[in-house]
Amino acid sequence: MAKQKYWNGSDWIQISPSMQEFLDHLANNVLHTAYTTCATAVGTTAKVASLTGFTLVTGSRVTIKFTNANTASAPTLNINNTGAKAIWLNGTQVGSGGWEAGAVIEFVYDGTRYNAINDAGIGRLCNLETTNKNNLVAAVNELFTNVSSGKIQVAAAITDKGVNANGSDTFSQLASKIGQIATGKKWASGITSSSATTMAFRLGSSGTSTVSRPFITVSGLDFIPNFIIASTNGETGWGSITVFRRDGFGTLSMIRDIHISDTHWSSTSSGEIAGFRSDVGNAYVDGTGFRLPFKSPNINNIQWVAFE
View 1 (spheres, rainbow, N blue to C red):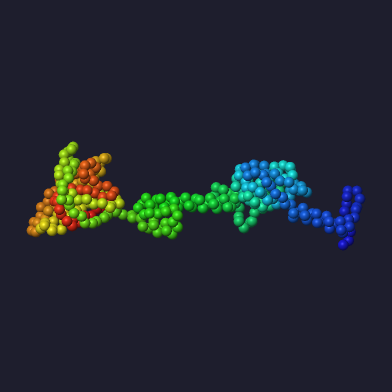
View 2: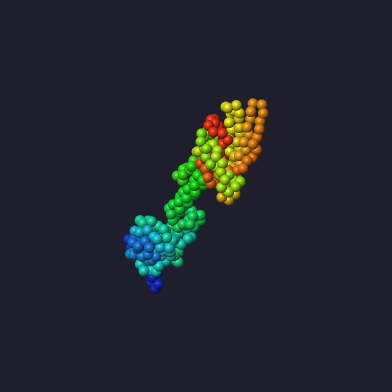
């Protein structure tokens, strides 16, 4: 290898090949082995590191392993007391959670700040739609938390509509349960019997007046009926249909009883009689069932239908 000449400002000097190789080797070391560690506490803003032979100039590159994570809102980096410089990543200043403990980050100094080198395939973190735009893991965790919270709220709304759902259900399960939500009025039907004894039922037409009547009792509903129809099938030679209508006036609920009796060849109707109070006394209509006065005692196979 031929000797090379260099101008030292006044005279030309010659450097032997061995000296040139040595200088090239030193330059290569500076370029590729600028590595150190930083043990500054997690909450301290000014991160400090030392690196032998490091000079801070525009274009300087350095790789640092951070012993601790970062929780400071706007951390800076100061190497060899060259001054605290802001740390940026993908066009955004790094904030709390910028890196985890043990992270190894390469920086390039642009004359103003240290820019962390990021895999271009990940994209610019500043374009994330999450609140955290500085740490990919934190952003993904934030997304997971938001999705989980959203599922819990959706599950609660489904449960409020009468279909049991849980925040741990899959999206497919939640979608299936949404399809199970009843969109129309609820109704129920069954068979019951009238009582052998009577109870006093408060009349709605006057203050405290009561009338003693047999009654029917039904339980197991999951809605409050507004209309109830009870019918007999003529097992004693006659049939009847009793219609109850529930009206709400503040704290006052009224039940209107329309009773129709049929014989073999003729029919009579009692018409609408005074209502019974269902908010006080022995009659009631609620979200679990009802107890209502009935015309005759000991009647079996009374078919009832209740509508919301």
